[in-house]
Amino acid sequence: MLTRLFNDPSLLPSVQKYSGWVEESDDDDDDVVPKVKDEDQETHDDSSDLIGDSRTQSEHAGEDDDEDDDHDEEDDGEDTEGDRPKKRGPKKRKMTPARVERSKMRRVKANARERTRMHDLNSALDNLRKVVPCYSKTQKLSKIETLRLAKNYIWALSEILRCGKRPDLVSYVQTLCKGLSQPTTNLVAGCLQLNSRNFLTEQCQEGGRYGSGSFPVHSYPYQCARLSSPHCQTGSNAHPLRTHGYCSAYDSYGGSGSPEYNSPEYEGPASPPLCINGNFSLKHQGSASPDTERGSYHYSMHYSGMPGSRATGTHNLVFGSSGSRSGIHSENVLPYHDMHLHHERAPVPVYDELNAFFHN
DNA sequence: TAGGCCATCTGGTCCT
DNA sequence: AGGACCAGATGGCCTA
Image 1 (cartoon, rainbow, N blue to C red):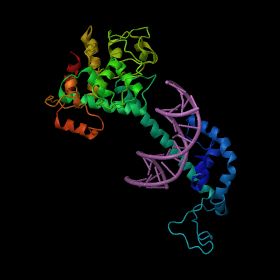
Image 2 (spheres, rainbow, N blue to C red; image 1 turned 180 degrees about the horizontal axis):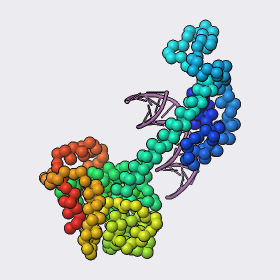
Image 3 (cartoon, rainbow, N blue to C red; image 1 turned 90 degrees about the vertical axis):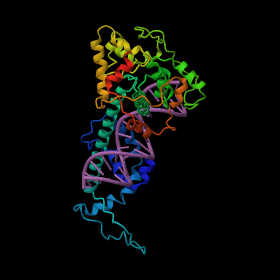
């Protein structure tokens, strides 16, 4: 980067900013920026000679007429230097100090806008993390994994709506984990209370339909300790994922007494309760009203705009058992826009009907 | 220590 | 002209 800066006179304002912009950053309250400044201070100081060479072409030339910063660069001998023909195209304006200052200010403002834009993007990504399965505030999914999981999640939900049947857990998790990294796959499988080892073994027995290298059977360290128990083993470290602050949707909604609920690490809304293995009904334990409200809240939040039409359920099952699992499309097989076409072809049920899938 | 992830800066491009 | 968006570059942090 430094080489690029020093070799490109057009980046001169940047270098100048780095070397002395501490007082210039007006609205910048980000603590990262000063860190960069301090780190680069010495480097840029050492290279000030190189910068000075560049400045002799731009700023130093502009210092002659710095009283008129809007004065265009005219024939100061630069274009007719020697016998060379005049340069074509728009004439470059001299970088007078005032112009340099304005350019720097524009750059500072643009940086602030860019930071804000990226922060907004990250906020939206955080919101997305909260509505996909396996939300954890302490150990967030990476951006790319969040997007991949969200895409798979949307795809899985759309298939549930389209087919009108509850999928089997293995297929569901396979769909969710499609294209995800190994740690995220472990996480999703753990969150959905599926033994990832079993799920992967089954996957490999299918001849690597989902990408033979995607989910290697080896090195899956997480044994789902809750396979036999639908509850979080409170106070224990039985599940490795729990040591990282993870809790399944089931835990979050069904286990009201679980430590995650009271843990300061676990804040905000949890992942949608899309545990499809039947344990989801645990939300109805006791009085149905609060739990139902909870579930309804989430589904109404997700599907509030759905038309009140019924699912036809006439399409091929994607989440069927092993026989129909070929309906699970790889990203490469089924383009993403095809998924949206499904919605156009098949009406979707209302969300309370979707609730019924998981509440029986 | 390498690799992954992230935040930030930056210049280019497009649009209003 | 200025803002939004994008992609490349860079360096920091963390983890295996």
